[in-house]
Image 1 (tube, rainbow, N blue to C red):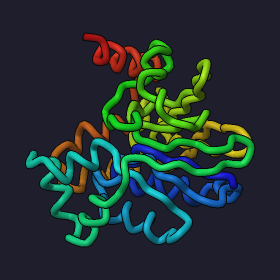
Image 2: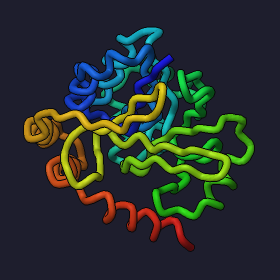
Image 3: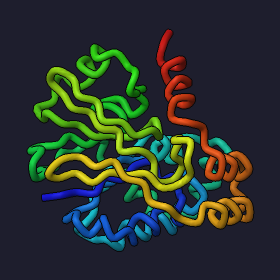
Length: 236
């Protein structure tokens, strides 16, 4: 089975719509979503697009989804107000991880950041020992995640870890929606969409962080810059 792997949509329904309409996604028999779905501008619309896929989608919970459910900050409260009780219950029931069988790769472990830590910082520069410590207990030879919003494909002694990138708020130096197609190997992909229109929609939404989100959409930092920031945050 081939899968399309999406992560970090962050309520950017315009970007999600573009990926779901991308003709390359037709090669996938299933979509897996690696967390951080609702924490963003259009949470209900984003969730509705995914649930409309029925059995063709599996979703796990990311740290930003957890924060929306658990914290009382202005941003989290704003997002919760846009979701029904049933939708919030559905998000709360999402698992932290699952595995899928992928043609050519075998079993693939799916998580947001790490198997038991949804805020683990893993980048293309993170020492291999950090990956081994986090994933040493899993049986799969390949793991996929998101969280840091930068795509990379890292091969270690006993693990291949793929960050599939961010659909909704990528930090790649170039606007777009970033995702991956798995099977028989891994393809890191980018889908274009009308980022300026998406930014205008954000600015008109009333979202507390609208100005910052819109700026990030149209002028994202480079992958090198963002990776360096993550690595600085990871170190004590």
